[in-house]
Length: 130
Image (cartoon, rainbow, N blue to C red; front, top):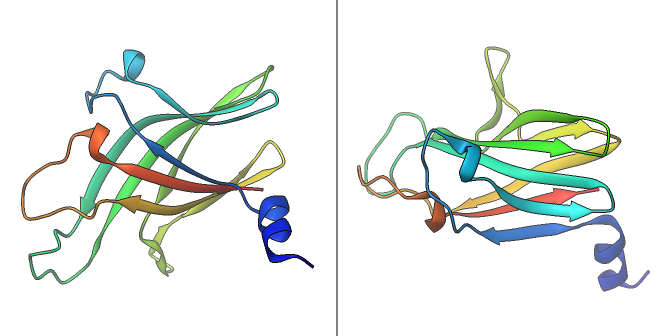
């Protein structure tokens, strides 16, 4: 099977540069990061608690990417994480299955530096939808 065709059929990676702010009031700060047919995935907020790259930490931390998925009949909020499964007590899901779709967080860039918070518009989110 043609590798490019296999990627095109089974994998959709959306990379989106944000043009909104990181305010807690998300009503005016939502960005559509995926849209196909009647399905829309909208970014709500990013809570980045990852250990900064230039600091020595015991744990790498986690970033939460908060989104809403909607079809013509309903919508649902969900969160994907960068940390993934660590053990029975620490599970930060990197994927979700909603409306017969499997959605996976592939990457969240850039990685934070020291204690300088990043504005939402500086992030790039990559998701896979199949």
